Length: 221
DNA sequence: GTACAGATTGAG
DNA sequence: TCAATCTGTACT
Image (cartoon, rainbow, N blue to C red; front, side, top):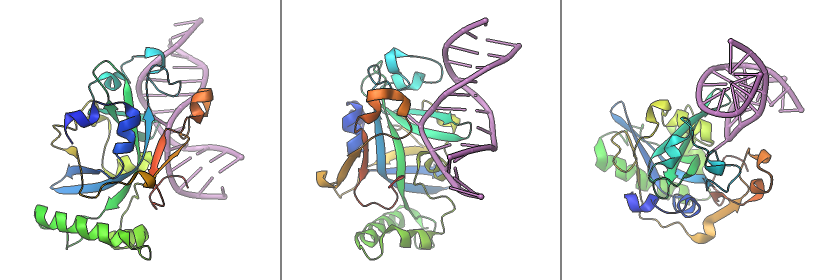
């Protein structure tokens, strides 16, 4: 995805990210996931945001970078949280990526370069379009160790940690985002309260969590 | 120097 | 419902 995609308000980017693919180059293979759940944090006014009241520390510095940079931090002493900065430089908005639908690239069918990878993506998409089969079958086939259906687990799935702090996903060699041919329908996007921020008073009630309707990988159902 | 809470998770 | 686990941050 080009820079322009990310230089927009977090609330727009968070919705637009649904259905996009994250590709992670790791030890000679690609780990791929489709974004199915996000949350927007709009910065200075938003009491739930780390950048509330223009707070700027070593930890959240990356939120201030121009859209398309990684803001990653540790919560509860053990889980990484993967965010992408949005809007202009100096404007601390970001989107938390909360869940991915796994795309299997480890099967024999999938190994064999980009062409096979693309075929696998297509196959995966048509596979999932069948309500009878759905995502659970994909899990069975891919023998996943970690299911990326939560913000902490998604970082384990994509092998992300502090070393990605501040990295640019527009020019990324180890991680980047890509569009797909299937446009997400507006009616497939559900808005809900953000999770785990009850301390944020009225801001906790804002419907700034977005997810794909009926998707099995969404974190809390 | 020290206290403390957190954008989660899985087990019971 | 609860504890694991640890670091950045805000205090003294």
